[in-house]
Image (cartoon, rainbow, N blue to C red; front, top):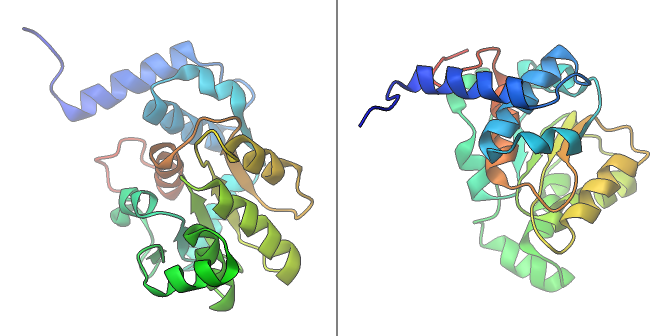
Length: 215
């Protein structure tokens, strides 16, 4: 049996196929690289048509990371997938989902633990200037918008790509429709998930296209 077994060659061929099959004409060059990685994670060139973004999202995210901004994640899956070696020194990946205090906070507020995590981000002054990566929970994205509206906090950028049948499409549309002035990238509709969100973050964080390149 003959097959490609070199990691770099597999990536290169994958990206060649993606660029051949996907319509990438509407994306600025820096966003296009991110979209290619998102398509790679989804194995579906068709998602290119449903990706919504602000033109400055890549620049804003890189500027924030270069200044030492943290990455706030809604889930362990999202946090685990971020490649630390691609991040500037000092940048922390923050995920509160396993903290015991979230259970009590969520119960007290009659909400999800991911909503409670957003409240902790705000209470601990983590939100302003941070990069927010949401790959699982629509409630986290909904509540992020609520908290930003209520407190005036403004993340530097939002990678908002929750997945699911309940609230996912609506939360992402709310991000696009909000008047908060946030820089963002998202995948409209039900599709999404931590793998696609992580692919976007990793692509933004590094100018190297191949995962096994450092930066």
